[in-house]
Image 1 (cartoon, helix red, strand yellow):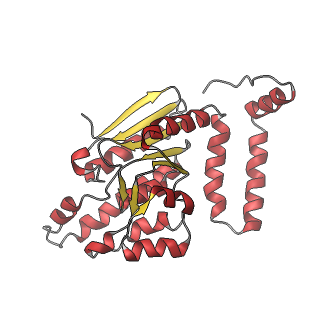
Image 2: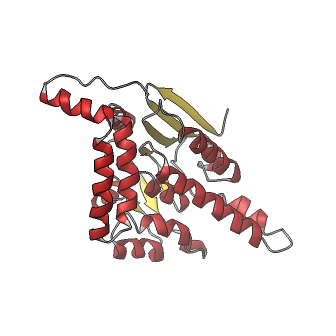
Image 3: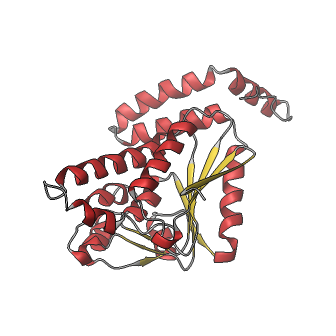
Length: 262
């Protein structure tokens, strides 16, 4: 079995991390598999939404501590390996955000450290009500500095800092209140709720969603006046597309739009 399985249904790609014996840790192999799928998906116009989940009892328990510890056996004490590891991890996290398709995390069990970062790096997230989240590396003497980047861009700063310094777990309903996930649902509804959201997004005009996702993240980093100037240009470009004109005409004429195939 592959360490990362892909199952496409219609315009939705479902990626399943498949290393249950290691709680789907972001090992070297898992990071490579995720990066490979990101590289494929970014050019796949037939896919309009992506679901990311984990097989087994956990979504993702973060980095593979055993591999990291083995890296210390290198002559430099592991410094070069660690630098490369976090560069590869950053590439995956940013790669998910830069995909043209919205990525939905389907989260169960636990999502800790870099696993929590993975959830925060997805565009959307739905979790089982009994799921636990944490950035608790501080409990073993390792501050979750890189997970902090994504986490602090999802939830209010004081709550993020408390999680990072106290090392406590947060249950899914609280994660929903703070904005780390979109909602918490009963465990037996997790898959159907996630699929319903993915199918809804996949039913939209893919070109418009692609334009919107890129603009969404770009404008977040801008002062408000620059954001309006930038997005004004984006929406004009969107309006000039053939399928957008067709969608607007269909709305006026009260009919389904006749969009071009990908």
